[in-house]
Image (cartoon, rainbow, N blue to C red; front, side, top):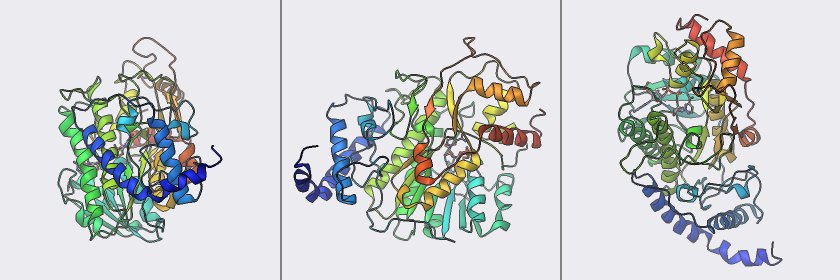
Length: 461
Ligand code: NAP
């Protein structure tokens, strides 16, 4: 660093709020364009990493009184997009060239008082009938929070497990809240101090015939509608915790040459699931469409928040493959959520081959816990948290299942006949450090998932 660096920095610090406004405007325009189905990654300027690092240093200096970027320090209001891999401790984590075009400004609240969740506070959970959300509602009620749960459906079978949580505490259920309906969440968000936005369509099977309409639009529009509700003057929301996904990070199986043993962290964004100029997704279409839906939904949340006044801040939780106890009422396979369905299909002999590649695994109750922690820890505002316990190849998962259930009709090889596969690494040091997360061992998670499938009589193992 130059000896007169601090001196040179002063004029920049003096105009930082002006620069933030300019940057926000540019960023807003870039990201509205990046949500368009015609958008393609363009050239990335070699100076952009330097600009990002410099912006981060200025903002660190403004807000922390130091010009040295701290490891995992929050991305402050106005930080020019994502911190680059150079500025983080993530090994091999340079951003791909196109990421500059897709980079998203992640802002925390401008308030001098960092948000922390008061005991007994009122919180809102969207999509509360879901696999993850039922665990979240249970943990929130158990910890003494008042929960306003929004659901789309008034189907009694779907609502029953949620309603059964009522004796644990103060639970209010609001039905008819659809991601595609503007104003749908206004009532629920009015009273809450934290909004946990979990609702998003998660199907990759034959239920999806129009991926853009069924997956991408509701996910992106849902983010906007829920954050709009939180931004209303009548709303008390101070933090939104959004359930994003590792899908919004990963670039495997796509069109970009990211190695199958790549090490992912929160600096990365999915660029390989984007649709082409006709709006067609790469193969496998529904998997990429789902991944893209999570990418645009998270970007829409950061973008929306960048435009609002700092009334609330945003934290995002990005789990990979979530498994564990199903609290939904499972009367048939069609009641299973998508991730549990994948394990069911493996164990039921519905898969001729092992899925190639690898992914991270996390217990559903840990995902719920991460949401609660992200609501309560002040420095989580403005942060993404990759929420992964361990990373395994699917071949390794099948071997673990075979030890548990030696007679299950599990496949043995990948479609190309291979019996070993490279393994990704999903870093979880940030969530462990900032939120003090600890993860349930994978064998316990697999056992809980298998028990749930057996108890629902979907499988006899
Ligand atoms: P899930 O059981 O299918 O839950 C999805 C929830 O979203 C359901 O309550 C569903 O309501 C609701 N929803 C879908 N479309 C809606 C719409 N148009 N309007 C209102 N609500 C709508 O799946 P999950 O696994 O718990 O997923 C919850 C969240 O975690 C999602 O955001 C998902 O992307 C994310 N995630 C899941 C995993 C995983 O492995 N499970 C991994 C990473 C991220 P209905 O019951 O009315 O359909």
